[in-house]
Image (tube, rainbow, N blue to C red; front, side, top):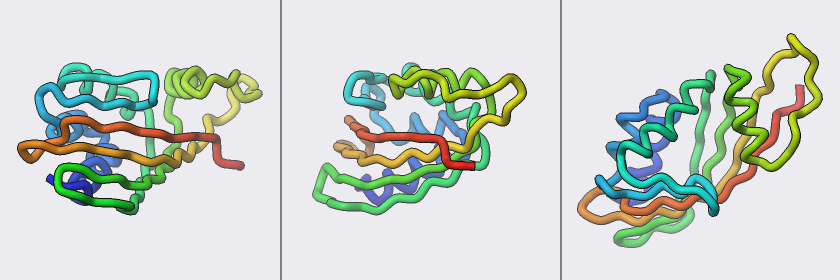
Length: 141
């Protein structure tokens, strides 16, 4: 596996809300650092983390490989999605360290944009370590 193959699989797993496809990208003890301060190790933790994707709709992910070398690579990624649950909105607000955007009961949930960089290491045809740095915000309505 190289960074291009990984990113194609990552895109497919995210847009398809498919935790099995996401886990299949990683070695059994592979680590996904979804932020610099949090990580998931192994397929059980990866699959549990990926459940939050089920609360997203109309997902569109694009990427550009920035660097590729044997056993590693770096890509820029950009994703938009419609928040489909109050639970996901609360998860997002907590992860960004912000308070909830001023919303009145019954207001529509926002469409989000995330933009980031991903660095991955590979061995034996699978990802052993994936690190993300990203930022997010609601898209203006």
